[in-house]
Length: 166
Image 1 (cartoon, helix red, strand yellow):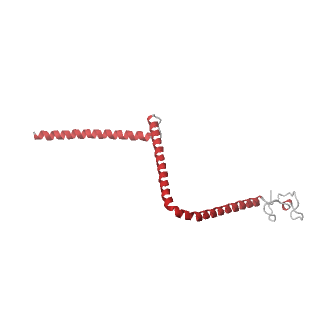
Image 2 (image 1 turned 90 degrees about the vertical axis):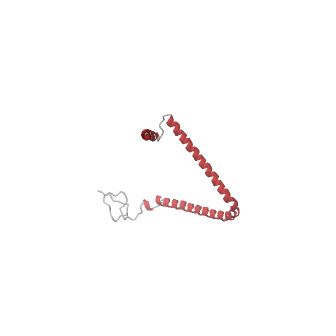
Image 3 (image 1 turned 120 degrees about the horizontal axis):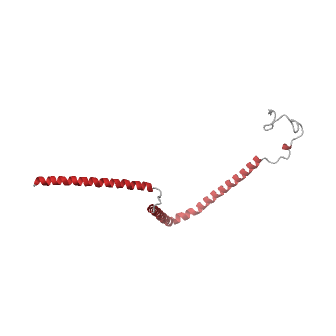
């Protein structure tokens, strides 16, 4: 059974047998002489280098943006009577093209659905359409029967009214 000694550094265990020098001897072990930098140290240095580089680049980008705005602001103020209407017109033109393209796509999709429905391919939603078609047919038949019944009732009332006057 393995025993962990409390007087040894963490990670160092005593398993009952000793393959190296006894603990507390005067000569140094291999881990303390010419030990290369640990993996954690290399990871930290790499992360710090990349972080500092990215921070420097973001600072340069911010500086360039501010300098560009400082230079461009007078030009924007001078040319704003031309640029604002031009931007408005460009926005309207782009919106019109997007709207017309969207309507074209919707029309193609609708025509494709109708073609698939007519050719019997059963596109998505055709079962709902068939149900609605049957429901409307039933309601139209009911309205027709009621109209016929009301017409015959009205005709009977008219006949009664006309026979009483003669």
